[in-house]
Amino acid sequence: MVRGPAVLKLVYIVVAVVVLLMLAPFATVPSGHRGVLTTFGSPSEQVYTEGIHFRWPIAQKMNLVNVSIQKGEGEGEAASKDLQTVHTRVAINYHVRPDAAVTVFRDLSNEPGERIIVPAVHEAVKAVTARFTAEELISKRALVRDDIVTALRDRMARHGLVVDEFSIINFNFSKTFNEAIEAKTTAEQLKMKAERDLQRIEVEAQQRIARAKAEAESLALQRQQVTPELLRLRETENQARAIEKWDGHLPTTTGGAIPFINVAGAREAARP
Image 1 (cartoon, rainbow, N blue to C red):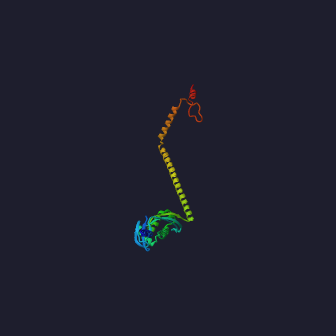
Image 2 (cartoon, helix red, strand yellow):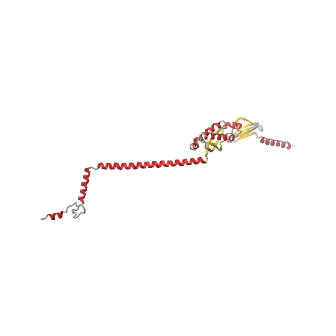
Image 3 (tube, helix red, strand yellow):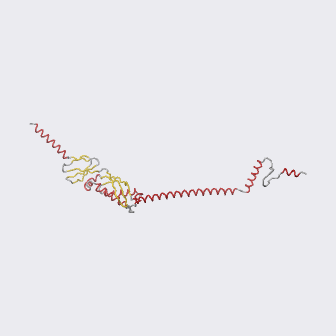
């Protein structure tokens, strides 16, 4: 007889525990999130941080808002300043500002990517692309990126969103424009080569002129140094060297003009 009420009491306790667990009077906010508590669907203004929080079962629900850095990619077409069709692919890293979790949950239905990020990126890319020519989009890519980020931050900040990183993955143009760019690049390379060749030819010509000028100045200097006294000195030196080499015998015959007289024959003819 005693066991009946005890068992029944135990059953009541177990049922109460099960019901309590099913009703879950406690809510957990995990890392990288913030909680927004709703009472019969109406969100409170308080932002709940990470941890365990009490809630009224059935009446209240803890809704999670992701405040960690999230990544999104997208692509679309726009027109440049010179009316070239530009296909752009971009990537963005963003996060919900923790203190704006209630605003994002209430105003954006906790879907900031679809509600704000995607249309904001498309609008910013189109607006900035229209300010640059197709060629400038390539040569001033960093400036284009900075202008897009500035436009994005102004719009996203109003909704409690923060831009962490933004990248232009690629610009694609029409086949005709790509061919025109390639032809222009080739022409510029040929022009640079021609300019280098011209500079080389000019340098070589200047070098030849400098060498000719130096040779002319050297000859002029030598002519100035050749005086009658120097010529007589050179003649005397040549005669002296000829005498040093003479063996004391005079030639008996000569060809052509006769520079010497046959001394021996002349002496015989002079004898009585």
